[in-house]
Image 1 (cartoon, rainbow, N blue to C red):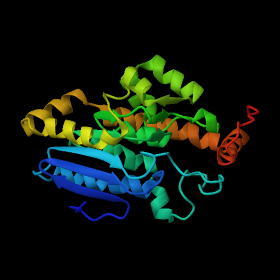
Image 2: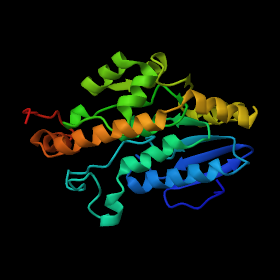
Image 3: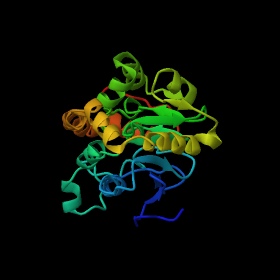
Image 4: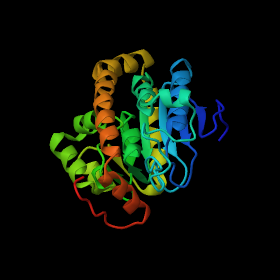
Length: 268
């Protein structure tokens, strides 16, 4: 892959009129504010590049994005930022960067070949369409961590699969297989795992064959107000997440995840 733009954790290549944005933090592609910032920068450049008419968001490794890396629970500060970040970096919260992704103008297809978990599911909801496979797993596992959904999922997931299906995923934290995701409308195309990226590129190429102004204007009409709804949602989500992060249940949830065991929640 010959990168069009240089980034630390993602690769960007334009082939024909399709841009391929590849997350490069294998095997699980855990995200932080730096990764989301890079994707936002790439999308802004692609929006301004007349050679790009559609984009594919994909990833190296086993997972598409397994969410934020909480580690043992000691890696994040009380504001949700990595402790290694500077005060300036912490001032611009992750969700501010996430909103930039929803403000992008380029039509996008997500190639979800593996797990999309927690905030990784939130990232998978940024594209207009998702191509997946039976081996993929989609999980909004926030309540399993003693936490509250984030990354705008209370808007994006609900609007995509309906309130009832979204509530089921939120309340149970269950992992939804790729074929189940396709059946409920969470994914738009189901193919063999080896064909996920090619199928996503094919769909993006099909979009790119059409008049670019017509496509982008239609997209803006259909997605009108989405970034604003996500912004309002993340403001609320973050307030609840900040409060729940201080609970014993959250500490237990993160610890149980690290130890690969069933959490013992106390409701406190």
